[in-house]
Each structure stands twice: as structure tokens, then as C-alpha cells.
Image (cartoon, rainbow, N blue to C red):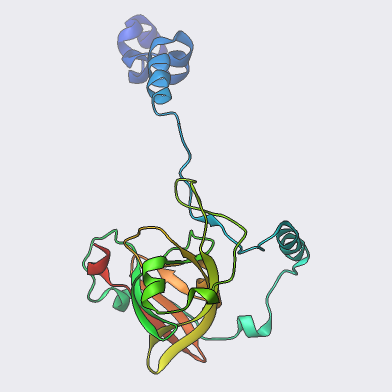
Length: 238
């Protein structure tokens, strides 16, 4: 068999050898590899687009932020009995009932904030703060004198600096009777146009110990030994 293969020469070489040089050879010889690199260079990043960040979440001063970092460094691994207690939260096929599939919709919900039923609340796990836009704040008829000053700037998705009007701590309720949970969380009030009334960021979601499924358009959280939930408004998000 070896003699026959040698006599046949290149005609019986493995197909991979007949089809052309290997990927390593392409990279060494130049043209195909260089052309690919040139195309990739045309997609080089020219600006950074991040997420909502900043704000006074970790302290509204340099001293406050350093204190927060020290607390993080000495935090023991594990959790308290209170944090560990509660029902198991899970999602199943029943959570897809009533949804239009397939979808890639944002999670938009309704919530009761300071005794106001607020629509167009965008659930954003990437936001380091809860944001309330000025139009919604004014409709709540809360006096601006109740706003506390904020020294730390907020940065939007494109990295632009936004100076908040102030911050205020408000009660927020999620769920429907009898499975309703209420917590107090701080909102930064921003004078900026938006299609949302409120952005519910990580601080509020942590207060509720919320478990989120954007695919199932639901938020779930413990209410005593039971599980409360909020379903997203899929049509509104479109």
C-alpha cells in the first residue's frame, strides 16, 4: 500500500493537502491572513458605550466610597440566616403562558412608588442606581425641597456626564395582593428625556432579593414563605 501511494504521488495525497495550504501556512505566506487582518482593523473600536454608572451608590464622597471598599474587603463569605431563609424561586413552562414568542423585548413593568401606580418602569440589572425622570417626579407632586443634594455625577450609556437634580428615598411595592412586598429605595431624579418613567436598577432589585427572567418577562421575589411575582408588559416594551 505504501509503494502504491508513493507511486501515485500527489493524486492520492489527503484531501486537506490538495485543497491548499494550512491555516498556519496562510498566516506565514501573507496574503489571505493580511487581508483578514485588514478587514478586522476596519471594525476597530472608536468609542466606548457602557452602562449607567456612577451616582452615590457606593457613597457620595471619596471617603464614603473608600469605606464601602473596606467593607467589601472584610465581608465574610456566606450569608446570614435571614438572607438564606425563604422559598425556592424557580421558573417553568407555565411562566411562558400568554407570551408572544420568540421575542427580545425589554422587561417593562408597573410598580407602586410613593402611592402612585407608575407605568413604564424599565428593569435594568446593568444600572448601578435607580433613576426617576423629572416628568414622573413632577406628576407625583413631591416638593423638590425634599430632594437631597448629590455630589456624584451619573454617567449614561454613552459615558456622558449627567448631573442629577437630587436624590430621594421612596417606598416601592411590587406584586399583587396578597403577595405584595414593599421596600424603600433611593432614586436619583434626572432632568433628561426618556421613554421610561423610572429605571429600576440593582439597588432596588437587591432590596427585593429579586430573581429576574427577561425571557419569561417576569420578576419573582419571596413574600414570607411564598413567592410573589410581577409580569412584564410585553406590548408596552414594543
